[in-house]
Image 1: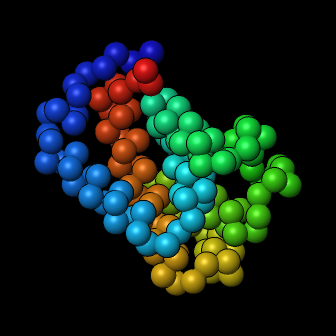
Image 2 (image 1 turned 30 degrees about the vertical axis):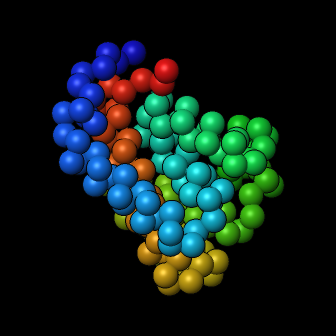
Length: 146
């Protein structure tokens, strides 16, 4: 288990404020809250961010997400619990989160384009970028669930 290194919010309040402003903007972009929480949870699982997995599992539960679906997010391809829209976004989330390993395939892009408008595609991608930044802050500086 990693020990907390620094409290990034205290070390740079302006950076933390900027991230919260980005989150406030994302909340106003019209993507359903349940889908945003699936994005946050899946990216956090991939990045091994214990703090964010804990937070976003709890947040999704509070927003009405079922235990069954939460347990299945890491194996979403193998379950019937997710809609085509959610499946397209989860695949895009994985591709964007793992972009250094391989760029998103044409198939993943086509599935996303079939389910989302161009604006939604951009907005979802922004949400993916934001959670990946939070994951890097939390993992890099050893933030743990409390």
